[in-house]
Length: 400
Image (tube, rainbow, N blue to C red; front, side, top):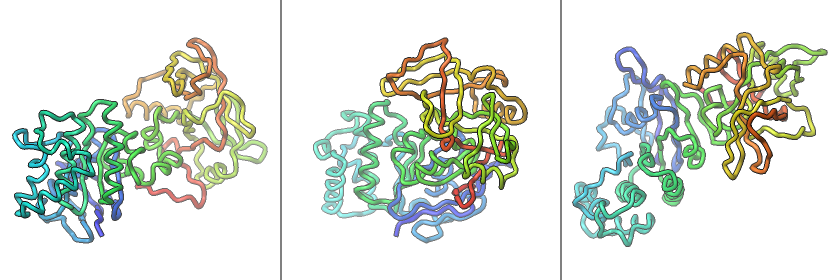
């Protein structure tokens, strides 16, 4: 079995941890994506696995073998870089087979491996060309072919699509996912693009400031974010965060926000009851917003629209919640602090920014006031002080 495991890995430069007690595993044949903003530690983690960096503490295992102090050349891992790193004077065939030649693989076997990989990658007709005669997508496939022919324990991919234009990136990421599933090779893939992560991964590990925030399937991270960072980072447009307070109303727990109160359904009430948190941030996915009242209980909002983006597949309405819906206090302060930490545009704490993703045929204009509704079961509650989700009893989240 080909597996990768990081066990309590910490890497410190001076006194600052670049990786802070990271533990995760990539199962045999799995496509796991490390995702996070610049400086989160994802590429550092990949280099630790590759052996290019040695952790300050913790261990690295490949296929059950402790390789923490094993040189990169003896780990049997194939790396695909952001830059294609092809030899310009060599043909595609020679680029793909160069590592095999250095390893002393006989020419006949070398050619057979190259031709099999070229067939999988759609490069058969390009084997006699040089890199300068190839497109960016073709060059990246050649770089992948060079990794495939080695038949390694696992692939390590460091933002391999960053140098491609947007349209080509969409096509090549689909090809990479198809090839990985065809070959069944364990893959650890690094990207800062959460859309890449959501569309390609079997599981996603979210890193921020060197710490593992959450690991799970794309659906886990989207539907059940472990904290404010994951909720805001995964999904486009990002999750709206609305300050609110939890209190009692006629013997039931309710949210005070949006100029009124909203009784919590049993699952959210159970989470709030066990946590004893009073100040919360309510997460609302833009795609969970409706312009017509749902059948069940819902959060009712009014949006003063100041920007409309018509994207063809959907319409994004941006603006501020009506003045009467604003709330102040520690929850509002926490929301503002989070925005500042994530380099969001500063705004008046008394004014709450909000984005709604609507049907493309929705009639909405700048300067108007738009009534919006969010089914109560689609709300996410986070502790305003810690940023962590308020979990319902019995629901487990993989979280650092």
